[in-house]
Length: 308
Image (tube, rainbow, N blue to C red):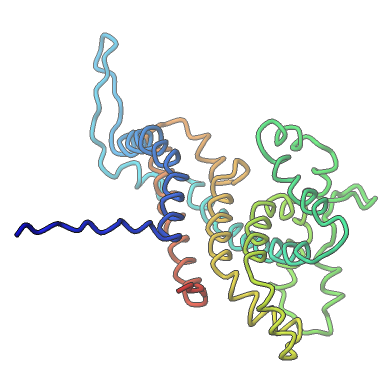
């Protein structure tokens, strides 16, 4: 008696698997670009940080192994590299929390139901377009932007900031606030123009996260008598905590690779390929370490919703 083989019908892929495949297809051009374009450049940069090109006569050049000479020069021989690197890190510590908090605040406000919400979202995203490419050069010579980022003439001939430390000290004198916090607040207010410029993408990411939260969750909170403050910290903040990590990583990379970054500007002016390559790799490793620390700290409070 012959046995017939029963072929079980192939089950269609689940929605999560189809989404995963779509995600891989979406990032495929980026991965191909990394392998074909950026990876060879990285390899050449690493090569130049260990080897020097020297003339061998008759138009020929040979590569001479230098070991860690260029890396030692970056720390001991270069008079300004370490100082520029530390200044860049200090700027990062000041800028990242300000951008994250501001973009989250604006995203929460723009997520509310109000008249002209789409127009307000477009207005807050306009600086992202202005700060790219040719518009960045035009904006760099703009008088209004230079006044906002560099200060305002107070009539005394000196170009000061929007507020100064003395004004804030007078305001907080009776509140027993430390001088470091006063300086941070002053720098934050005087740098508000750049903070708005750098918060457009982060705001959109936060908006996407806020709109993914079901309205039924907020309705249940209102039924239970939760206040708006409690709802934000118990529901909104945990639900968008993955976006906080994404925006933190994005802001760190954006801050370190921006043309106005003092460390990037310094390395670009180094004429020796070996020295500049070594400095770039030190800079790159510093960025990776900072991102790892931020990711480790953020992993302690990030909440990932399970959809079983």
